[in-house]
Length: 249
Image 1 (cartoon, helix red, strand yellow):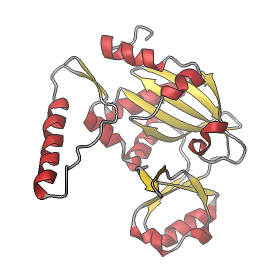
Image 2 (cartoon, rainbow, N blue to C red; image 1 turned 180 degrees about the vertical axis):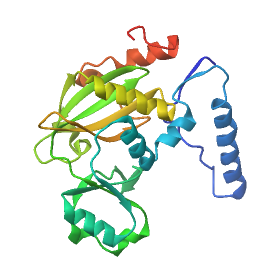
Image 3 (cartoon, rainbow, N blue to C red; image 1 turned 60 degrees about the vertical axis):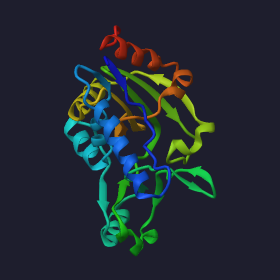
Protein backbone atom coordinates (compact mmCIF):
# COMPACT_ATOMS: atom_id res chain seq x y z
CA UNK A 1 0.00 0.00 0.00
CA UNK A 2 1.40 3.40 -1.04
CA UNK A 3 -0.74 5.73 1.10
CA UNK A 4 -3.22 5.38 3.95
CA UNK A 5 -5.68 7.99 5.24
CA UNK A 6 -6.43 7.12 8.87
CA UNK A 7 -9.77 8.88 9.22
CA UNK A 8 -11.56 7.99 12.48
CA UNK A 9 -12.18 4.25 11.97
CA UNK A 10 -14.71 2.63 14.25
CA UNK A 11 -13.29 0.52 17.06
CA UNK A 12 -13.90 -3.20 17.03
CA UNK A 13 -16.90 -4.05 19.17
CA UNK A 14 -17.65 -7.41 20.76
CA UNK A 15 -20.70 -9.23 19.38
CA UNK A 16 -21.89 -9.90 22.93
CA UNK A 17 -20.65 -9.75 26.53
CA UNK A 18 -18.96 -13.14 26.47
CA UNK A 19 -15.26 -13.42 27.18
CA UNK A 20 -14.74 -15.07 23.80
CA UNK A 21 -16.38 -12.20 21.91
CA UNK A 22 -14.33 -9.61 23.81
CA UNK A 23 -11.15 -11.57 23.09
CA UNK A 24 -11.99 -11.73 19.36
CA UNK A 25 -12.63 -7.97 19.23
CA UNK A 26 -9.26 -7.21 20.83
CA UNK A 27 -7.46 -9.63 18.52
CA UNK A 28 -9.10 -8.07 15.45
CA UNK A 29 -8.12 -4.60 16.61
CA UNK A 30 -4.50 -5.50 17.21
CA UNK A 31 -4.26 -7.76 14.17
CA UNK A 32 -5.60 -5.48 11.45
CA UNK A 33 -4.52 -2.36 13.33
CA UNK A 34 -1.02 -3.72 13.71
CA UNK A 35 -0.79 -4.51 10.00
CA UNK A 36 -2.07 -1.07 8.97
CA UNK A 37 0.43 0.59 11.30
CA UNK A 38 3.38 -1.37 9.87
CA UNK A 39 3.17 -0.89 6.11
CA UNK A 40 6.67 -0.41 4.64
CA UNK A 41 7.14 2.72 2.54
CA UNK A 42 3.56 3.87 3.20
CA UNK A 43 2.64 7.54 3.44
CA UNK A 44 0.32 7.90 6.41
CA UNK A 45 -2.15 10.76 6.84
CA UNK A 46 -1.35 10.40 9.68
CA UNK A 47 0.17 7.33 11.34
CA UNK A 48 -2.37 5.95 13.87
CA UNK A 49 0.21 5.90 16.66
CA UNK A 50 1.16 9.52 15.97
CA UNK A 51 -2.52 10.47 16.13
CA UNK A 52 -2.92 8.63 19.43
CA UNK A 53 0.09 10.42 20.95
CA UNK A 54 -1.23 13.81 19.94
CA UNK A 55 -4.60 13.29 21.62
CA UNK A 56 -3.04 13.94 25.05
CA UNK A 57 -3.66 17.64 25.71
CA UNK A 58 -0.84 18.05 28.26
CA UNK A 59 1.59 16.88 25.57
CA UNK A 60 -0.02 19.28 23.09
CA UNK A 61 0.36 22.25 25.41
CA UNK A 62 4.01 21.49 26.15
CA UNK A 63 4.79 21.01 22.45
CA UNK A 64 2.87 24.16 21.47
CA UNK A 65 4.89 26.17 23.98
CA UNK A 66 8.16 24.85 22.56
CA UNK A 67 6.97 25.63 19.03
CA UNK A 68 6.52 29.28 19.94
CA UNK A 69 2.73 29.61 20.19
CA UNK A 70 1.12 31.96 22.70
CA UNK A 71 -0.96 29.95 25.19
CA UNK A 72 -3.48 30.96 27.87
CA UNK A 73 -2.52 30.17 31.47
CA UNK A 74 -3.62 26.57 32.07
CA UNK A 75 -4.12 24.36 35.11
CA UNK A 76 -4.62 20.59 35.01
CA UNK A 77 -5.55 19.33 38.46
CA UNK A 78 -7.77 17.14 40.59
CA UNK A 79 -7.26 19.35 43.65
CA UNK A 80 -10.38 21.46 44.42
CA UNK A 81 -8.34 24.04 46.35
CA UNK A 82 -5.98 24.59 43.40
CA UNK A 83 -8.95 24.89 41.06
CA UNK A 84 -10.66 27.45 43.31
CA UNK A 85 -7.50 29.54 43.54
CA UNK A 86 -6.93 29.46 39.77
CA UNK A 87 -10.51 30.38 38.89
CA UNK A 88 -10.42 33.26 41.38
CA UNK A 89 -7.34 34.78 39.75
CA UNK A 90 -8.88 35.41 36.30
CA UNK A 91 -11.95 34.64 34.18
CA UNK A 92 -11.64 30.91 33.53
CA UNK A 93 -13.11 28.27 31.29
CA UNK A 94 -13.34 24.53 31.80
CA UNK A 95 -12.99 22.06 28.95
CA UNK A 96 -12.58 18.29 28.88
CA UNK A 97 -9.21 16.64 28.38
CA UNK A 98 -10.90 14.25 25.94
CA UNK A 99 -14.12 15.06 24.12
CA UNK A 100 -15.55 11.55 24.13
CA UNK A 101 -18.95 10.96 22.54
CA UNK A 102 -21.87 10.41 24.88
CA UNK A 103 -25.65 10.66 24.88
CA UNK A 104 -28.32 12.46 26.90
CA UNK A 105 -31.76 10.85 26.70
CA UNK A 106 -30.63 8.95 23.62
CA UNK A 107 -29.43 12.06 21.79
CA UNK A 108 -25.76 12.79 20.91
CA UNK A 109 -24.26 15.43 23.17
CA UNK A 110 -20.96 17.18 23.74
CA UNK A 111 -19.14 19.01 26.51
CA UNK A 112 -18.34 22.49 25.26
CA UNK A 113 -15.80 24.85 26.77
CA UNK A 114 -17.67 26.94 29.33
CA UNK A 115 -16.96 29.60 31.96
CA UNK A 116 -16.46 28.36 35.50
CA UNK A 117 -16.38 30.39 38.73
CA UNK A 118 -14.80 29.56 42.12
CA UNK A 119 -18.24 28.98 43.64
CA UNK A 120 -18.89 26.15 41.19
CA UNK A 121 -15.83 24.18 42.32
CA UNK A 122 -16.60 21.43 44.82
CA UNK A 123 -15.11 18.15 46.04
CA UNK A 124 -16.20 16.27 42.90
CA UNK A 125 -13.18 17.84 41.18
CA UNK A 126 -11.06 15.31 43.11
CA UNK A 127 -12.56 12.40 41.17
CA UNK A 128 -10.42 12.96 38.05
CA UNK A 129 -8.09 15.37 36.30
CA UNK A 130 -9.67 18.59 35.00
CA UNK A 131 -8.41 21.26 32.61
CA UNK A 132 -8.96 24.90 33.57
CA UNK A 133 -7.75 27.69 31.32
CA UNK A 134 -7.69 31.49 31.45
CA UNK A 135 -10.47 32.82 29.23
CA UNK A 136 -9.07 34.67 26.23
CA UNK A 137 -10.96 37.93 25.48
CA UNK A 138 -11.37 36.93 21.87
CA UNK A 139 -13.13 38.72 19.04
CA UNK A 140 -13.09 35.68 16.74
CA UNK A 141 -11.72 32.17 16.33
CA UNK A 142 -9.57 30.61 13.63
CA UNK A 143 -9.47 27.01 12.54
CA UNK A 144 -6.20 26.27 10.77
CA UNK A 145 -6.15 23.02 8.80
CA UNK A 146 -2.69 21.77 7.87
CA UNK A 147 -2.23 19.18 5.12
CA UNK A 148 1.42 18.31 4.63
CA UNK A 149 2.96 21.78 4.45
CA UNK A 150 -0.15 23.58 3.19
CA UNK A 151 -2.11 25.66 5.67
CA UNK A 152 -5.77 26.66 5.22
CA UNK A 153 -7.25 29.13 7.71
CA UNK A 154 -10.84 30.17 8.31
CA UNK A 155 -11.80 33.00 10.63
CA UNK A 156 -14.94 32.00 12.53
CA UNK A 157 -17.19 34.67 13.99
CA UNK A 158 -19.85 33.66 16.50
CA UNK A 159 -22.60 35.73 18.17
CA UNK A 160 -21.41 37.94 21.07
CA UNK A 161 -20.85 36.07 24.31
CA UNK A 162 -20.39 32.64 22.73
CA UNK A 163 -17.40 30.89 24.32
CA UNK A 164 -17.31 27.71 22.22
CA UNK A 165 -18.32 28.26 18.60
CA UNK A 166 -19.13 24.55 18.16
CA UNK A 167 -22.28 25.15 20.20
CA UNK A 168 -23.57 27.69 17.62
CA UNK A 169 -22.98 26.13 14.19
CA UNK A 170 -26.14 27.67 12.74
CA UNK A 171 -25.11 31.20 13.70
CA UNK A 172 -21.51 31.34 12.52
CA UNK A 173 -19.90 33.28 9.72
CA UNK A 174 -16.68 32.25 7.97
CA UNK A 175 -13.93 34.02 6.11
CA UNK A 176 -10.77 32.60 4.56
CA UNK A 177 -7.73 34.39 6.02
CA UNK A 178 -3.99 34.23 5.43
CA UNK A 179 -1.84 32.45 7.96
CA UNK A 180 0.90 34.64 9.48
CA UNK A 181 4.34 33.25 8.68
CA UNK A 182 5.30 32.84 12.33
CA UNK A 183 2.12 30.84 12.96
CA UNK A 184 2.74 28.64 9.91
CA UNK A 185 6.28 27.93 11.08
CA UNK A 186 5.01 26.96 14.53
CA UNK A 187 2.26 24.77 13.01
CA UNK A 188 4.76 22.79 10.96
CA UNK A 189 7.11 22.48 13.94
CA UNK A 190 4.22 21.17 16.07
CA UNK A 191 3.24 18.55 13.45
CA UNK A 192 6.85 17.45 13.01
CA UNK A 193 7.23 16.96 16.77
CA UNK A 194 4.34 14.48 16.77
CA UNK A 195 5.09 12.93 13.37
CA UNK A 196 1.83 14.17 11.85
CA UNK A 197 0.96 15.16 8.28
CA UNK A 198 -2.44 16.61 9.20
CA UNK A 199 -3.81 18.75 12.00
CA UNK A 200 -6.89 20.88 12.67
CA UNK A 201 -5.82 23.67 15.01
CA UNK A 202 -8.04 26.04 16.95
CA UNK A 203 -6.99 29.57 17.89
CA UNK A 204 -8.70 32.40 19.74
CA UNK A 205 -7.99 35.81 18.15
CA UNK A 206 -7.93 38.96 20.27
CA UNK A 207 -8.57 42.55 19.16
CA UNK A 208 -4.85 43.22 18.73
CA UNK A 209 -4.59 40.37 16.20
CA UNK A 210 -2.85 37.87 18.50
CA UNK A 211 -3.53 34.20 17.76
CA UNK A 212 -3.81 32.21 21.01
CA UNK A 213 -3.25 28.45 20.68
CA UNK A 214 -6.09 26.39 22.13
CA UNK A 215 -5.63 22.86 20.82
CA UNK A 216 -4.94 20.58 17.87
CA UNK A 217 -7.22 17.79 16.73
CA UNK A 218 -5.01 15.34 14.78
CA UNK A 219 -8.11 13.97 13.07
CA UNK A 220 -10.27 17.08 13.19
CA UNK A 221 -13.21 18.06 11.03
CA UNK A 222 -12.58 20.12 7.90
CA UNK A 223 -15.14 19.25 5.21
CA UNK A 224 -17.68 21.93 6.13
CA UNK A 225 -15.02 24.61 5.61
CA UNK A 226 -14.72 23.66 1.93
CA UNK A 227 -17.91 25.52 1.06
CA UNK A 228 -18.14 27.82 4.07
CA UNK A 229 -14.77 29.49 3.48
CA UNK A 230 -13.90 28.27 -0.05
CA UNK A 231 -10.82 26.34 1.09
CA UNK A 232 -9.56 23.53 -1.23
CA UNK A 233 -8.69 21.13 1.57
CA UNK A 234 -9.97 17.96 -0.13
CA UNK A 235 -7.78 18.65 -3.16
CA UNK A 236 -4.74 19.11 -0.92
CA UNK A 237 -5.44 15.79 0.82
CA UNK A 238 -5.86 14.01 -2.51
CA UNK A 239 -2.64 15.56 -3.83
CA UNK A 240 -0.72 14.47 -0.75
CA UNK A 241 -2.01 10.91 -0.86
CA UNK A 242 -1.34 10.58 -4.58
CA UNK A 243 1.94 12.45 -4.96
CA UNK A 244 3.49 12.52 -1.51
CA UNK A 245 3.37 16.30 -1.50
CA UNK A 246 1.06 18.93 -2.91
CA UNK A 247 2.06 20.45 -6.26
CA UNK A 248 1.10 23.81 -4.69
CA UNK A 249 3.99 23.54 -2.17
